[in-house]
Amino acid sequence: MKRSTWRKHHKWLGLVLGFFLIMFCLSGLVLNHPTLFSEVNIGRNLLPNDYRYTGWNKGLLRGALKWNKHVLIYGNSGIWLTNDKAKGIKDFNNGLPKGADHRNIKGMAQMPNRQLFAAEQYNLYTLNKQNKWERIALPKDEDERLSDITQKGDSLFVTSRSYIYIASSPYRQFTKVMLRPANNEDGQVSLFRTVWQLHSGGIFGIVGRVCVDLIGIILIVLTLSGYIYWFLPYFSSKPNAKLMRQTLFLHNKIGKLSIVFTLFLCITGWFLRPPGLIAIASGKVPALPFSAMDSPNTWNDELRTLRFDNNANEWLLYTSEGFYTLPHIQATPKALTTAQPPVSVMGINVQETDNQGHWLIGSFYGLYRWDRENNKIIDYFTGKAAQPIKGMPIGEHVIAGYTKAFGGKDIVADYNSGTSAIAMPQWLSTLPMSLRNVCIEVHTGRIYTFLGMGTMFYIFVVGLAAVWCIWSGWKIRCRKKQT
Image 1 (cartoon, helix red, strand yellow):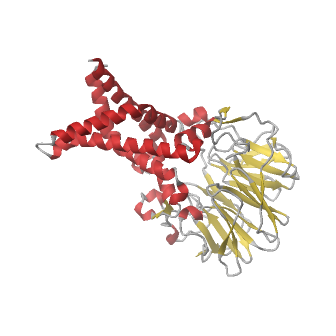
Image 2 (cartoon, one colour; image 1 turned 30 degrees about the vertical axis):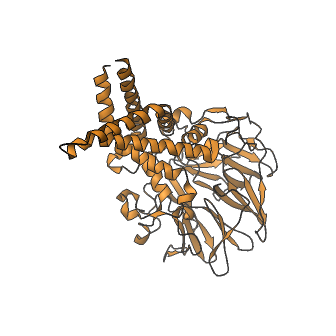
Image 3 (cartoon, helix red, strand yellow; image 1 turned 45 degrees about the horizontal axis):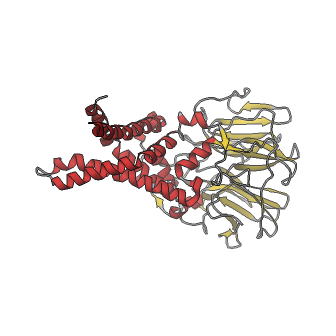
């Protein structure tokens, strides 16, 4: 193409994409340091109406637990006290941090001595005699996330993304357990996680994250300098010629020196959402030596849930690599070779047992009844045998929660529509959202609700356009040198 054509592409793509690129970068800066912003909330009344809770949707109801003569509903915005008729719902978060990021409750457990525990994504809490949540220290890193909690006998098991923490009464001292490598361990790691860590810089620890932060800042400077150069003449009949030259020089110089890094950031981010995600979701690669992926713990950032299967008399472990079984925690996890319920790449949201001891497995792929003994997997809604799901990681039923704590009746909460089985008080609809979660919505494009279904292809379109914008800028520079 002619240099004038490249110039038009760069100009108009830059002008249109500029706002979105800045929002990418600002949200990415927050997401790269989640604990730093974990106490910051954003009111849902400031967000599009789609972000308000309706009928316990969007994970507000993840599960519920019978406690004394009450029922505790928990989910991604805290814990709520009610009765078995779901009447008179009250706040039950006294003692939990105010930051919404610390009220994302992954699960609850009640021990034989009736001591109550709640695991949010960063910390474990127990309810003291004053009905106030009290934090219990776990021997883990500050930013290590918890993903599940369960009990067997008088032992409490807390699962993080990488380790299992076990304690017995009085549940003050926890033993950190690194699971043995699985029987099918091949020494490789997830390609998706590798690309994710490359995109955030986390693969090289805090140094890598800071480097990616700098690339984000560079993209902001490039965008703002481009805006100044193109819009300044419209705001002044006699724009400062020196300022125009300096702005253009800065834009060109920084763009030239940083093109490899800015392209790298855009391309790796493009692969983290559909359809690019589909290409890497199941891939595996060797761990990059001396990186965060090169860990002696083969389960690093892969554990999700751990539950005991009473029918099979063994532990059932779900990971980002699928289901495994263990006769005891110190045993070698064995990959299930029989059929498994379809689970979205976004992970399990429901793992409960029915009256027959069959598992109910729910995710954004739907809800399935799993009879392990007879190797049968039935779609909960159709009653037919489960079918393999291909393509997008979202099914017809987007399952976010489940409980049978209200009179033994199954209550299934859809992420979008929630459930009509329990009346949700209006005051819950505008509960605050953490800044981190708002930034996730911005970064993925879901915040732009005016796009409708187009939000599913936002990253695909904007990512390609950003790469082309950067590349067209490079081509202008190359053509200029040649001439």
